[in-house]
Image (cartoon, rainbow, N blue to C red; front, side, top):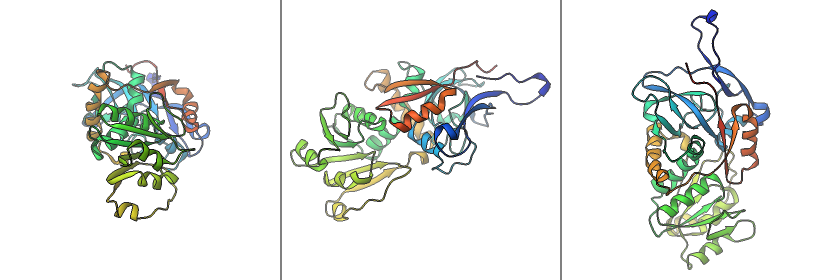
Length: 335
């Protein structure tokens, strides 16, 4: 919560509760729950009171020290909250995911965060703050890859590896909304999935060919990589396309270049941390009416108070079985 500053300290900045990465390592060792100065918005920026902030694998990787972020820093990229600084946006309920938050600037795992006005997107009225925060980075990555990069069309078939994970679930939902046919590959079958490949007991290529009458998938979203990379390539049709999302510790893989060259495959990747905040806000603006109309639904949510952030991070690290871990920095509003 916000901590009142004694009047004897004069112009010293107000304080807030926050999560801080002190050193790289396991969540219990790397994270501290402590008082930090309330950020001061710069020109063209607003102050947002954070009502909910999701914990993502990117945040866990950041806390582990693998991203090289200068420390100490406040982590967190996703948020849902209310603008509390004076101006045209005062009182607006907003949501989103800041590509530089927790990396180049203080993040959202705190009571307040300062954001450029151009990063703001109005929160869907249908969603609670916790649900809105849970949409965040997972749907951002899924939308950017499936819609903007791959241009998924109605009737196409998309293979989604790691389909039981948060990005995989989001991509599956978006594919269905687009009128495409998702094939989910993972070790666990999500509820409601018709075409499923068990990556521990089945040959991915054989199952995909079976599901597509021998044609192969039109495109693939790879959220796992590693040993699955070549089987995914071999599961694509001629002129098929594939995109993979960022992994902090991606192992080296071996595959035949003929798989790409001879079948004219299009292979690319996504590093969403390099996206522009304005571009990210536009994606959330497109997602908002889909959630308001019930065409897309948020993931299941497990909430934590800010002081239990290490436990929430550990839950993500251990694997959350398709449940989004969300921090609730509840406290008194800025006075």
